Amino acid sequence: MRLTPRSGADRLDGWDRDDAGRTFLRARVKAAPVDGEANAALEALVARTLGLPRRAVSIGSGALARFKMLRIEGLDEAEVRVRLGASQA
Image (cartoon, helix red, strand yellow):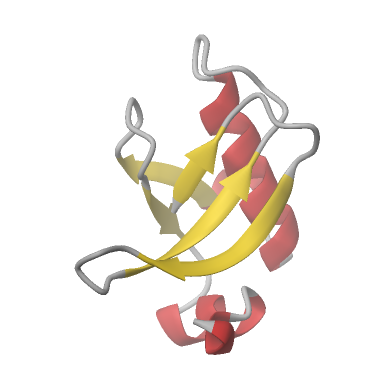
């Protein structure tokens, strides 16, 4: 997941690939990257999009980086990809 803080809206911008061919999801949040606010907004956005409670989504790695790995409880990887529209990647 690639996070852009201080955006005009909280939204997922779709799938993209980096130079190495790895697929990632672009996300934007209104919150600033201060005191974990942008990370919390990202977790809430992804949970809402997946139809999960907020506590089911957490930052697994990359808390201080633009690229993040999320930990999602209650869904397997295939279901996460379906709900996030990974077929567009």
